[in-house]
Image (tube, rainbow, N blue to C red; front, side, top):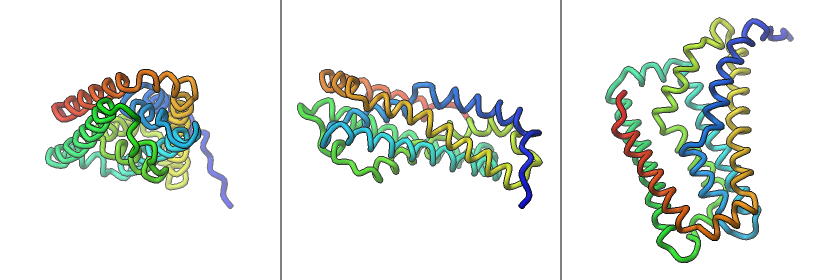
Length: 217
């Protein structure tokens, strides 16, 4: 079995991964989303944490999907097609509006909303995947990484290694957020200020939807 010589690609791998690391650790819609799931009170503290980690896997999978499509050239095609990007923007903005509506609904509810605390892990995974995969900003982000040419001339195996590393970084970074936001101190703090926190999340998601819908290509 032929071994892959990754040495020539490591400098560009490092450059691409540093961009991904910064983006994954920076607070944004995904972190706000993990806050809402991780602090949900179900049957014990592990309930929110399990759902948050499932959502983390969904976010990482959505990022991986966009990464692969960009490497295949689909991202370039979409970025040049105004109608396609408009559709993606509408889908992404619509999903953020749905999240904002859910947050506002929880803020107006005296007790924690049952649909959040009873959310199955597979639904959390799907929600995280849809959030990441429907965001056209993710396409622009991966196009910026693709411009580095980290896998150029490396063949399928090098591309597979790069994608695996990208998934691991995305999962690890968002996983750290999930673990922190689902910790008992944060959950207790959120429980005391739940309605105000959910109201802020609703405003944040609504603002993010507006920014996405009105952003220039």
